[in-house]
Amino acid sequence: TYQLNPEPTPAVRGFATLTSRRLGLYPVVDTVEWVQQCLQWGITTLQLRLKRPPDEEAEAAIQQAVALANHHQARLFINDHWQLAIKHGAFGVHLGQEDLYDADLNAIQQAGLALGISTHGYAELLRAIRLCPSYIALGHIFATRTKDMPSSPQGLARLKAYQVLQQSIPTVAIGGISQSRVDKVLACGVDGIAMVSAITAAENPQQVAKGLMEKMERYYAQ
Ligand code: TZP
Ligand code: MG
Image 1 (cartoon, helix red, strand yellow):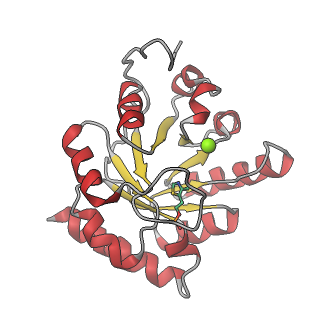
Image 2 (tube, rainbow, N blue to C red; image 1 turned 120 degrees about the vertical axis):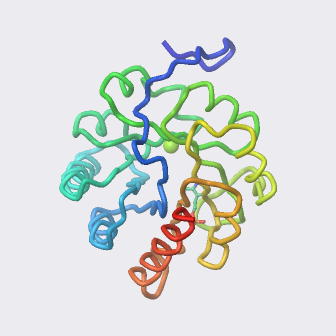
């Protein structure tokens, strides 16, 4: 079994590898309606982040979102609710640091689900690397109003340094990334950019998402 503390974690390979390591524009949304919207725009990797207990409503939303994502052959990561993600055959699970103590990582791995892990600094990044997840989220890069963050923003210099530290696991930047900051974040070498408010609070979310998807495709094609 995986042990995080105080024993060192064994370096076990096996969380689903992303066949296309670029996650590109990675919207993080909180309703099935948003999942549907994103899929219609052609988003290929996305996250359903339901900040609620694993009740009937959560399960219904996860079931519907998974069905929609599978229909579009998109990679849907379920935040927190790893049991429901396994039960309904989601592509992957996204876990924060505190979730790593409770979640059964072996069960996630054995069910063939991908795993993404949030990190907020060097120590957490090292710990995440040892678990060999499918991707690592690095954040928050800039100040954000979407989530209360106890730590300070990582900034672009650290984001860039983290890419030098390890290249084998795909990385995603998150936190305070607005449309106008995307170029600078891409230049740090990340494989994906996770966004909440830049998309969901946009006046025209579709236009923003399409523009960013095109920008990222152009960037990665270079
Ligand atoms: N995890 C770290 S920052 C964040 C999450 C879920 C919120 C990012 O939201 P936004 O609106 O893109 O800053
Ligand atoms: Mg969590």
